[in-house]
Structures are given as structure tokens and as C-alpha cells.
Length: 318
Image (cartoon, rainbow, N blue to C red):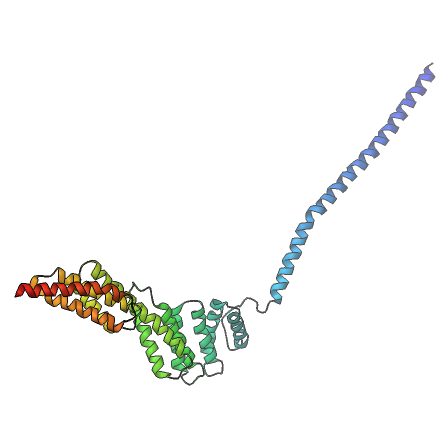
């Protein structure tokens, strides 16, 4: 009986050992399969990072293949040609600020070479294209002064004027720049009487003069509307002498008729007749100088009323 128990006990121990070895091998397989899964996941997550590095490398390669890499240091005689090509490239691609910075450094080194006048002209034009008209006017005038025999001297003078023209402000503001632009245009016309740009100059003159006329016209209207009749009379007379060609001239002449009538009506008796006569004279000037203006028909009533008042005054004086 004891022998049988011993055999059973040994058998049980052997079975337990076998079960433990089977469990251990299964656990090892599970452990390594889990590690393998994590490795795959790590590989999948790291893929975008690798592609990002590749895209950065491709961007660097594209920059290196660009026409011009980022400039380092100042322009020297040794780097003149490369920087000149870079400046022209910027200019042709409308990168005017970048081009202007390079042209400014290139010009002192180009003096005495065939590139000098081209660099100065393009430098001035960079400012013009960038709407910095004060600097553009200065450098274009400087070009015309330095290179008067150049084929571009006439164009440079015109561009300087166009820059000043663009500085002319709204008509209600101070018109010093407008007057200066007109003076510059007249100088240009006297220097180049047969210029190919004459039509353009005449158009600019018309716009500038019209702006001055508009300012004075609005002023005389203000005098009239505020019943400052004497000031309106003087302002209108001066306007018609200076801006007889203006589009505002017919209306100004009509305002003078009304102004003189109202001025006479509100005057003391010994001044009335003289001022009613001025109203009639203003009407005659209106229909003579602007016969096609429709305002003449409206002005008739002031002329007729002025005549009636003169007749009454004459009867009263008798």
C-alpha cells in the first residue's frame, strides 16, 4: 500500500513539472509577440517623422537650386557681377525693395563703367514702382543731371515730373506740390519742345490746372453762399481771368451774375445803381464768353430785374 502511494506521489510531481514547463513556454511566446507588436507600432508612428526629415531635405535642395541664394556680406568688386545679376533679377520680378538695396551698394562701385547709368536709372525706378515718389523724383533728377547726354535723360526727367505729379494732393489741401509740378512740366516742355511725351505732359498739365481751378472755384462759391459778396466778386473776377478755359468757368460766370444782383439789392441806395449795372455787365460777359451754356437762360431774370431796379432808381432820383 505504501509503495502504491509513493508511485502516485511521484507521478503527481512529474505532472506538475510538465504543466509548469508548458505554461512557461506559452508565456514566453506571448511576451515576445507583444514586444514585436510594439515594435511594429513604433515603426508605423516614426514613418511621418522620417518623411518630414525627407521633405525638409528636399526644401533645402530646392533653395540651393534657386537662381540666387541668400546674400552674405556687402557688395565688393569681386562679387559685383553676381550681385548685379541678382539685383536685375529682383527688379524684373518686381521685388523692388530688394533690388533697390543692391543697386544702392552697386552704384558707387560702378562709377566709370558701362553699368553706372543703368544702375542709377533702375535704382530710381525701384522707388517709383514702390510709390516712394519723393525719393524717385530726387534720383531721377539726379540721373538727368549726371547723364544729360544719355538716351534715357529725357525719360528720367519725365519720370521725375511724374513722381512730383503723384505727390500733388487733394484739391482742398495745400497745392504747393501741384504748383511745383506745373513749373516742372513747363520746364520740361521748354527743354524738349518736340518730345515724344508731349501728349502725356499736356494731360498732366490739364489735371493739375483743373485741380487749382477746382480749389479757387470752391472758394468763390463759399464766399457767395456765406453772403460775403464783395469777396465773392473779387474771387470770381480773378478766377475768370486765370481759369477762363476751365470747366468751372461758365458756372463761375453765372455765380457772378447772381452775386452782383444780391450785392446790389442789399447795398445802400447810393451804391445800388452801380452794382446793378455790374450785374448786367456780368450777364453780358456770360453770354458772350459761353454762348452755349444753358446757364445764360437762367441768368436772364437777374439781368431783367437789375434793369427794372435801375429804372426805378432813375425815376426816384428825378
